[in-house]
Length: 171
Image 1 (tube, rainbow, N blue to C red):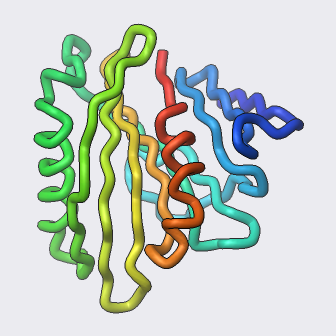
Image 2 (cartoon, rainbow, N blue to C red; image 1 turned 180 degrees about the vertical axis):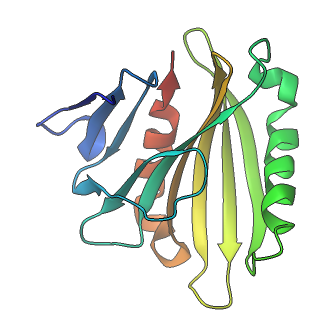
């Protein structure tokens, strides 16, 4: 059972709080975003939110298994992890998208390390997208918190998305 605690008032920079006590993560997300059910979601997708007005803007939390004794830094540097993700996405045969790795940085939480990764995704059928993700390892799980928008909107939402990505924490 998933427990959701959402604040009714605006948080930092127009952000609201989401807490999932069952899976052990929390984050801030933009006001006006709602949870959505995604049919045929990829394995590990735990949650998806979408902007009510700008429906192409979304966030997701994906949870994957890793060995219990693994820490994030055991998977490599932020750049190593970013390139490994990029390689995995670009090699899928059904993927007609071209993903470009923009940046990677490490961030220290209370007792965990987080990597912030930024990508640009080009597709022949859709407008170019801009993604920012926060990645962490805890309790034998790899958590990926991803925010996505069109490149056209990126400059409008960049600051809010960066705050949200850096707010992502796991226990």
